[in-house]
Image (cartoon, rainbow, N blue to C red; front, side, top):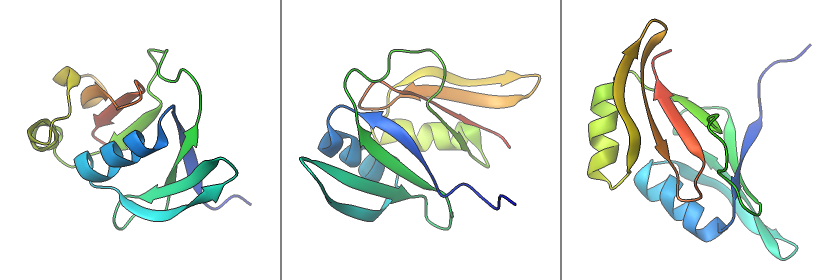
Length: 118
């Protein structure tokens, strides 16, 4: 029986740039950062969360309009203001929809990220 998701991946053309974005702007903590051939295996974690985020080396990420990552926030507007203050550029400010409030931004690699209510 399945228990939980161990990790999910976000494509990163420049792993160092992506690591800087996710750790300094979003507040993720480094769980693992080690050599993997010519690239790196980087696992990040939201403090207190079980699921890890892997910044996987990839060419031309961020070409779609489907979020590569969806994060839950207890206060979308407050999180939006906090992240905007750290330099995150949003593509959509907090918006209310029938399914909940959400906001979207692109990460340093062009991946679409959505923050919303549970």
